[in-house]
Image (cartoon, rainbow, N blue to C red):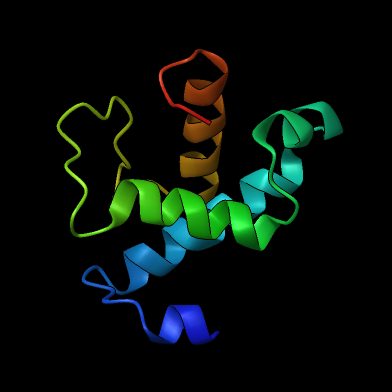
Length: 91
């Protein structure tokens, strides 16, 4: 909670939704994927992914995956998992 409280969440709800999505996606990975990512917890994965792609200092011009803000969270998770398996998202 301290990490989230200190974030400049410009998108507020959408940013929180993205953090929750990263957390949920990590929990859906099999053990081999988790080991390959070298992440120990869903929190660390969510924090690292959010900071990597959504930090105000990060330029997303080369990012191939864009969140569809009109999609439901479930649709966004399916899209993210699909894109990550096809290699268009670095995980």
